[in-house]
Length: 504
Image (spheres, rainbow, N blue to C red):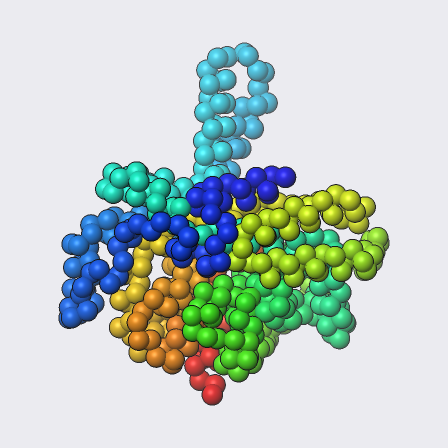
């Protein structure tokens, strides 16, 4: 029930208007609108020459633009420091455990020091949670909005946003991580891995190729959850080297980001523009889908050839004993699939998503013999991350829109990739949809860049925090290094961008 509580918290955070059908981060048409953030058409700077002059003019028209963006940049910088905070928290925890061995009550000063160390350990652990970073920086953002714009503006802004995407991600992650869905997907991937002898290398190839492509049908958040869980069981449990570990993570994030482009409802950056730009499944398959398949196969092959020797050595420590597991009855698996379908079908209606999730929890309780432990911490943190990112992202359109509108195809592709690394790619494509007079080739370029760059950072694509929360323990006490992820994802990102832009 904690997950339901978080979903209700997200709804309250966004003003409790779950019935809207608009995309997350867009104004709710059924709710009174406010003039914040300042609408782009009210700047009246179409004739202003030069991007820099236009941005300076917009800061002069509304100084909050600069302050809000500085806070946003601080949050981004914070994400690159989370591993440092986690390391500090670990040091404080060791000092606290050392003092615990001393006799309690022997010295009041030791008790005070013990309390201080425990508080500092928890504080820096919280500061090291990537999923909590943007939520932490909501505090100064809210304070600035109240001081510069007033309390009614803050209330009006928050309640004008829609919680559909964060709620959807929490629910789809929870359902996709259930035992029946995992077993079904694992069986599909196992059949592919069996073609290579079911070695760790074969599992690695199967998970990183077929897994992301399934995201076009079960959605990217679900695919990320399933692939990350299987990689943790089949690959990271074998203790691969650091380079291979990061290469796998970067490849996973990039492949998931582009793997959802075979359809128009699975990838968040595509969902944001599909309706407005009239992109249907036929268009996605013809323009993006087949190129995504080739790009995933090419990038995965490059990394496989690079690490083939190490992958082949992992089988030496692999246990040959088959795990004895109770099979999941087919009717239960079918019901879980129906819950996934319901969640995808009602993705833009948060109230219906939550209603379906309540029925799902009841069904899990009634069939608990065939269910695993519902691990809700990951979905809850990711939902909080997305809700916070939507709030921050809504204050950045003043500079993103003119930056995108002033670029041609290749610069727009590169600019979209770079901006995606520092902002959720769904926010990039949504803001691009606000730019008037966008040519079809430019629309294609901005979405291609957004999905190609979706693996560079944890915040680049909505499902990435889910993958990080599942796989972070495999990277040691310091967690996943943002720099290590960027370097690991660079080559697959280049391959994907080339596939989208060079293939006819």
